[in-house]
Image (tube, rainbow, N blue to C red):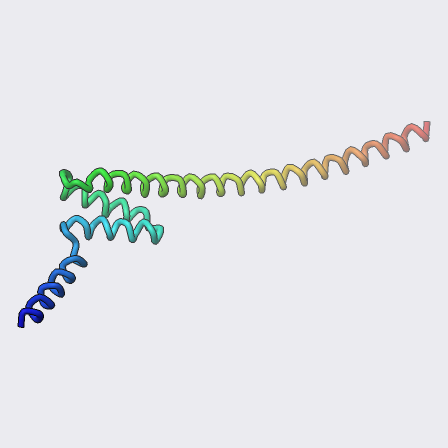
Length: 122
């Protein structure tokens, strides 16, 4: 009987180990999962919710750092997307300018040939 009670106690304690020790841990875990999935906006929202509900929690500093990291990654990705768009526009402009240069060179060559013909006629 004693072994049965001890086994039950061990099972109950083992089950408790898997439960979060504080309710805010679930918010942090959700934020971490969203961060890993690349959903930075939702991760920031989860960390903000934690910080609003549990500002004095011992994990608040960690939550703030995670929030700042997610926010920085989101901002960096937005900047990268903007720069890619800008680069694409500049590449298109470069292509257009190269085509214009080629056209001007062809026109210049035509003018040279015309000038040479006129010189020969004189």
